[in-house]
Image (cartoon, rainbow, N blue to C red; front, top):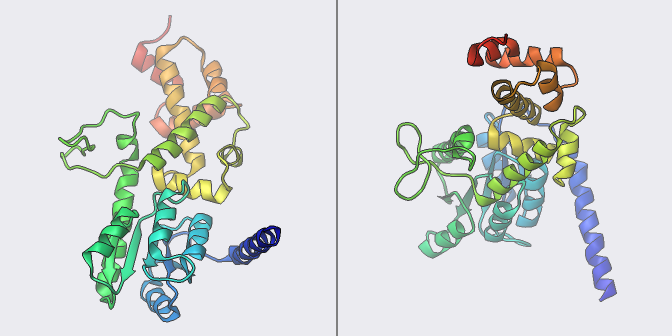
Length: 300
């Protein structure tokens, strides 16, 4: 039993080491990342060549490697074959959707089987779409673009669909846009992640030394994982989101308390009141003093 444990431990370390060697994978920050998980190298190459102009391409040859790379790189889309060695596509999809750092990533399943039962299993595992092999290149590109576009719309509606916002809902309780269209809400895992972030931020807001590394550490994530998760959920880089939340809190304090501008700046984590004024003006188009006078009337 001990030998088996050692072998398993060694194999895990070896696998992690191999993945670490790939850490220098270069990606174009201006293009989305697509992870292709397929044991067929020809399929990997074909899809990569079809999508390479518009996406950064990562590949994995089985579900186990795919889950590891999804957690490491947090891609914008996963294209996953159903039948693979080591870990099949169903289990791979299930693990991606149940992991907090990857739960938001859309998964497009590739299959040579047209059985409804298999597709049902895939959707139960959290798959966002299916594409039958052999596939048309135009259909593949359209499905990829559509899934990423849908994810962006959800991202843009995050604050509206979050539990803290009083959004309109349809008859089934799903949030609606202003036009009345129903939208997909973030998963429970995503809500849990964001609420946990908000809790940590609120507790540490007054700490002027609070930074992305510190919050990521408190959430048990690597900086890159935390960055891509927050960016995917809110459309803001973590630094931008932290500043935005601080300024929102500052705006509320300006209109509901008699605290001075300096007191408010320090309370929300700005070490320099002048920098708070600068950021506030950039965000709202007026100084904190002007905002207070306009919203509450000038103080005597």
